[in-house]
Length: 160
Image 1 (tube, one colour):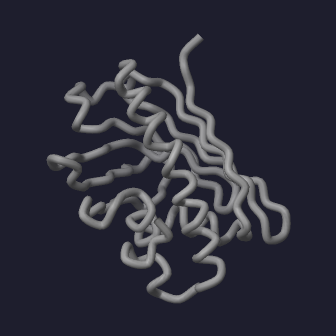
Image 2 (cartoon, one colour; image 1 turned 180 degrees about the vertical axis):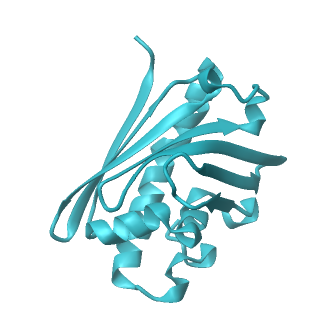
């Protein structure tokens, strides 16, 4: 059986705020990494379209992938290959990330499942990253739900 990462977090925010935090470019830049990482996200969220994350973590990196699912306030999925892995851009080298939202009024349960790790090192790195990052996303979504102003997603306002 292949390893997988499954993280679930209860968020005190409605599904729309969690969805915006998860998919709005400015919000993603706020929770995906520290401000000095200079995260840039490029996607049109079209199924079959590109999903690209650029930044700097000890050295420049580019994570590439393809959007697999985009169902507002319900489900998001995309593939992921980091340039840091130095692996060729082949399907077997991509990890698949799936996010599912289960909402009940002003509370949302967000579940993230990652599968398909080309190396044990990639599995360990992603396991470490998502163990803390999902909590950062939770805090961001809760703050976003309370402050739906334009600067709610800026990296300086991220709830880290």
